[in-house]
Image 1: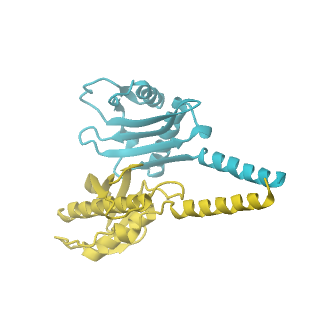
Image 2: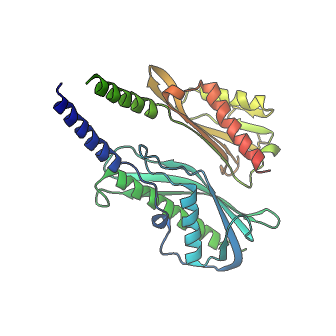
Image 3: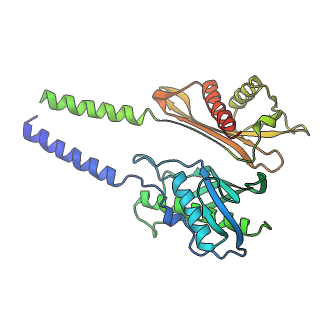
Length: 180
Length: 146
C-alpha cells in the first residue's frame, strides 16, 4: 500500500470515528424528565429532602441512562414547581425524606417505535421517627416514534425521559393523596 | 508502513478489549427494608428457566443463615420473596452476562432490595460467583443503612 492510500484510509477511519461518536448515547436530561403540568391537590407545610439510587451513568457506547443526580434534580424541580412541600432541602435535614430507587429500566435495542418501561420504588419517611408514610412501587412507560426523532439514539433518549417524567408525575400524585 | 499497520492494529485490538471488558455491579436497599430481621425467604422460579440459578441463590442464602424454601405455594410465615432475572450469551461458550436479584415484600411484591451484576466475556464469573457478588453487594448496602 502506498503512503497516500494509507493516509486516505486513516482520514476515512477518523471520519467514521467522528460519525460514530456523534451518534452515541447522551444521558436523559433532567429538565426533560421534569413534569410540566403538575397540579398538587395538597400543599404540605413541611420540608422535603430527596434521595435517589439505582440510576446509571451513560457511556458513549451504551444507551441513554438516568443518572441519580439528574433524577433527583427532576424530582426536586417538580416538587418545587408544584409547591407540594413547603421547601426542598438538601441532605437528610427535611421533615420528610423521599427515596426513589430505579429498580428496572427496560429499553429496546432495535425498532421503529421505542417503548421504555420503568419501575421505581417511592418511599416517604417521616424523619423524626423514621415511620413510613408511603411505600409504593410505580411503573411507567413511554413510547417515542419516528415522528419524535429519526435518529434511533435520540428516540431512545426521548422514550427514557418520557418514562421518567411519567413516573415522577405518578409518584407525586400518590404523595399528594396522603394525609400527612 | 509497518509502523502505521502496527499502530492501527493496536488501536483495533484495544477497541476490541475495551468493549469486551465491561463490569458493572450495583445494589440498592429501600430505607424501610430490614433485611437483618428476615429469617425465612422463598426463591421464586423464573418462568421458562431450568431452576439452576434459583438453586444457586437458595444455597447462597442458606449459607448466610437464612431458612430458604423453593416450594410453591410458599409457607404462611414468610419474610421475603426473592426473584431474579438472568441473561446468558455465547462467546466461545455460554456464560452468564447479567444477573439481577430482587428481595421483595411477600405480601405486596414491593422491591425491598435489588442487586445487579453485569460482566462481559473477558470479565466473566461462574454463576455461583455471580450470585455471591450480587448478594454480597445487597447485604453490604443493607449494613450501610443501619
